[in-house]
Each structure stands twice: as C-alpha cells, then as structure tokens.
Length: 143
Image: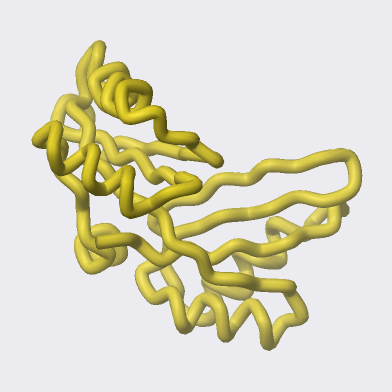
C-alpha cells in the first residue's frame, strides 16, 4: 500500500524545472503532486504522476537522472489539527520521517500527506492501528 514517486536529480540551473514540466506535458503525463528541495548546486524533484512508468521513461529519454521510490500516502482532515493528528501517530510510533509533502484536494474536504520513512512498513502499521486512512497508489495516481 505504497505510492510510486519519481525522483529527479537536477543541476541547479535556470530553466531545468521548466524542461521537466515541458517534457511531461508533451508526453501527456499529469503531475499530481510535487516537491523540490535544493542546495546551492543541485536539487531533487519528487513528483507523483498519473503514470509513473511513462514519466520515468520520458525523463530518462530527455537526459535526466531519474529514480522511482515509494512513499506512504495518508489522508488528513482538512481542518485545524488535521496535520497534528497524523504527526502525533508518527511521534508515538517513533517513526523517522525522511521527508514529506502535502496538498489538499478541495478546501474543507481532505488533505493528502506523502511521507517517506526509514521504515515504511512500520509506518503503515502505525497509521492503520490508529485508524488513519492510507491511500493506495491507484487512488493517488488517478486523482
């Protein structure tokens, strides 16, 4: 019950992010969520697309260094305290968050948190035990 995510290594140069969005747009790939972290010299773009394999192929064909990793997608209530409820489970289970990013679908309905943990299976067990909904890859890719 994990979601595939494409990770792209980027040189920190003007226009590189636009090259990626252009390649994916031309290939008909829709981005569902993304996160960009950078340092002075490079960045890592993480994105969830409607078609992971197609996104990876297109980006590789265009010269990008690409990998696929898995993240855990958790539904959160879109209200004050919605994030805290999730993070309390993370804290109580002593889970180590490597990174996370989030988005909402429709205001007031639901949010989605995408986590990468050092122990994904332990995280899934903790969320499941706390009654927190974990989304499947199919659900996230088809949003």
